[in-house]
Length: 450
Ligand code: NDP
Image 1: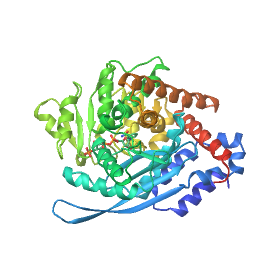
Image 2: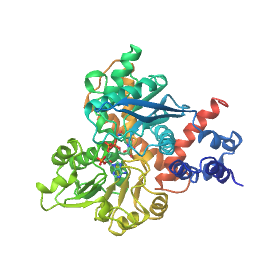
Image 3: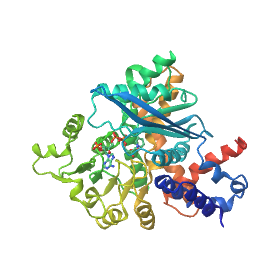
Image 4: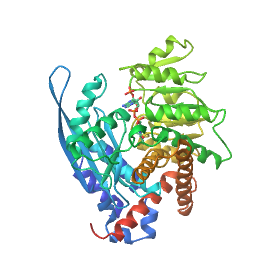
């Protein structure tokens, strides 16, 4: 049996319940055959088996006391997946759906994303099944402190440097940083996404969303097109989504949707960003309240769309930016987008398209930027934050933005050139996977069987 199918079959048999992890591995491995054919040493060195096995996985109990003095228990995770290129780097997600499969899929994707940036960072991911929705600030602080009390044994500025992800923003990073400092007596760059007063980088919070829009512009420029004046669809209403909306406006485009776990908002005039920010900054804030100020907008509750798909992708738009969560865009959604004239999809979220949607999109001539490439701006600026911390410097927002634009262009070029090299011009899934994989695999081979 061929090396790729053998590896996938082993994986499926070993972890039958880890469906998201399997999906992420299959999506990478099925694109690598041309590279493996050209270069037998990857099989000789058994790189596929090695690369799908995390170097280390930590699972731990997180106990904390809620506002009613009840003891709560959650599960904490950190998967240190691959350190061939540098210290483990990747975010922490706090969401009730978090489990070993989700963290492993995210950690696996992170390896190749980080490699694609060209920077010296390995891949990791972590988080907890803690649900921040409806929790008070004090509860969130106590949870973060308890989480870091265990995590601090496993992280460090040259070992493993976590950042944020779903449910983890500057506030949560701050509480974890405070606890790390208290336990270790060390003020150091152990986390990224820090506040500007205590070692954070200008532009980090906005980097994933802004970077994703820069990536889309790079894809379009190659086709003689641009986002200016175009209607755009954005899903999500968190960090990545709202910074995507912000940059789209800055470049003269018109974002006409946002969404959250409860519903989708559509406004043909363009979404009112300050209002969405205000609604989402309230505890349990709903997008439905938007209609009080804009009666011409439309709100679709999530359960009012039982069809195979999601309301947000059924509106006509020139470009789509899935920026909420994994598997939020089905094949039926992808077909609807193409039918409605969508020319470009840039993934702000990690693995937002189901496998069938990815296969379908690759058959069309849509400009499709997979998450490993399109949303790498966040981790790239995290690495710039690490560099500033190490040199005890703080760069200006302009300098960081300039670096971000340069990095996104390089990522696009790397993925695009590699697609060309392997005979599939424009296929950034194949180009991105092979370019990222090759860098990591070559470093692993040079470092021996470890
Ligand atoms: P946030 O927590 O800030 O926002 C997440 C948004 O997505 C919220 O609006 C949330 O809704 C919505 N959402 C979450 N889960 C679901 C679901 N199951 N169905 C519908 N909507 C959902 O997270 P981020 O913006 O940081 O992350 C969004 C995506 O971007 C994730 O895939 C993440 O892995 C990826 N990413 C993030 C990076 C970063 O720098 N933060 C870097 C690279 C990728 P609600 O408000 O109702 O909770």
